Length: 197
Image 1 (cartoon, rainbow, N blue to C red):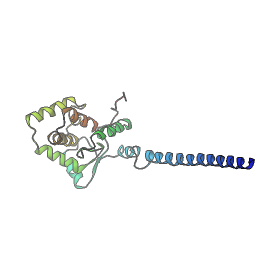
Image 2: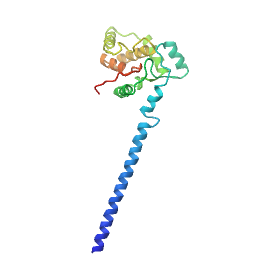
Image 3: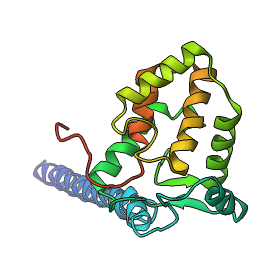
């Protein structure tokens, strides 16, 4: 009888030790996968490090600049005015996820297809808003941080002007939505994150 009790105790003890090691092993596997996700080559931090040293975004870049990049299949990357700030960048990327169902809106304003920019500039030139739509567009300009799609009339201004026209006409976006998309799509760099979050 005593031997049976001792055997049962050993079995329970070994089972508990086995469960402990199994739990510890799972913890290591999960922790390492999270670490790889956060620090791996596809992480937001890694992309930020790549983009902050990219130099294809330029304040003076206009339509011809975008057309040249588009012909080469180049992407417009990095900031045009100030050094990128990670906190601001992260907030912009997170904020733009709200609009991810609209494939026409770039997910990352610091990494934009030159072909997309060229198409939006062309769309803007060819598209005339109705009187009511223009009023909505003007209202969005007043609401946005930069007073329009960008701080200056560069490629970004005209491309995001085309984007706004498209969203107003085809998606019935409000002035508030247009202003928010513009603000979240700022590619000037610098620290402009929401200090309340």
